[in-house]
Image (tube, rainbow, N blue to C red):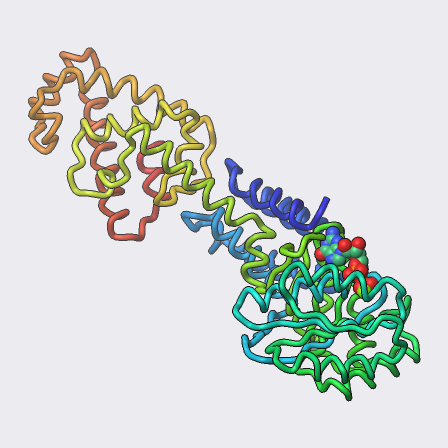
Length: 435
Ligand SMILES: Nc1nc2c(ncn2[C@@H]2O[C@H](COP(=O)(O)OP(=O)(O)O)[C@@H](O)[C@H]2O)c(=O)[nH]1
Ligand SMILES: [Mg+2]
């Protein structure tokens, strides 16, 4: 399972939970821990993240929040952003870029992706094939970029990479962005370092990006440090994020080395490539976009059932309105779920048996209300002692039961008022309601 899949699963679990209590949150923390360790995030990071997550989400402060689920998800999001490397500014101006990295890390593919990135942003872009090591390198890059309308320079069979770069710079002098694809080796050897340093001198690039395969996990940290020492990196491009369960390792290793992540490759196709923005990236990793649409769907369902959140929040709250709202809510399934979906964030720690009382009460309310006049229903204030007696007799209930309904209504009305005002001690109110 990829890191994204694991984290999305956790977020869904939080969003759908009927109870958010200490036990549940401990379970969430364990799930997060497991997901990060499986994604090869350094143990030290995982420990400090879970410690801080534990401090933040197990406090009474968060568990009494109305939208406790959102608060937990937001905290999780913040914490993951904090262990992931920074993104970086890539100005859209003329520049030279050198790509370095081990063989097979994805340099040539990335050269093509990067070229398209700049071309699509209006910069005339060309690539130079300075890989004199791998026999097919020239053809691979040429084929990759030429059909995309990107400039190409290379000298087939030439063994001197520096010569190629120098000639390439002359040939492509009208181009705004020059990307140089270099050769890799299986490891960072002396002759590779030599070659990188020489190309670097000939090119004097604005950016030196290390292309790194996400599958190596947290080893990315060591590799990045070694390359950094050899040529001085300005950024990292993580590739093959799509094909590995260890993607978290490279992302957190960047944080450790302090070298920002410039781009992330997420597939073999040339457009499977994105500028790295930690917040957007984590948001997608957690599936927060989906979550938003999930919440939107819930709101739509509520609208269809004519639960009018607006009416809830506006002053006109009659007994009839209260009953209508409760009825509509009942139609929507288990009440605890409805409370979860209410747009103003009724996120309560509610036991299911609390609602059986409510269902019973609602039946009684119906009976009592059937014995009220239209005037009493729309303006319950007028219901005095003698009216209570009459309603009780007419509905076969007792005056105290009628009073209970009126009390329920009053409290509910107050809830609506305070909802308008923003803050409400919802738990206390619900308790008073006996819900
Ligand atoms: N799934 C996936 N494959 C990639 C990605 N980037 C590169 N590859 C593949 O990795 C292999 C090696 O890529 P290449 O660019 O030749 O690596 P180089 O040796 O560093 O130049 C190729 O088969 C690419 O299609 C990526 O982001 N996702
Ligand atoms: Mg290559």
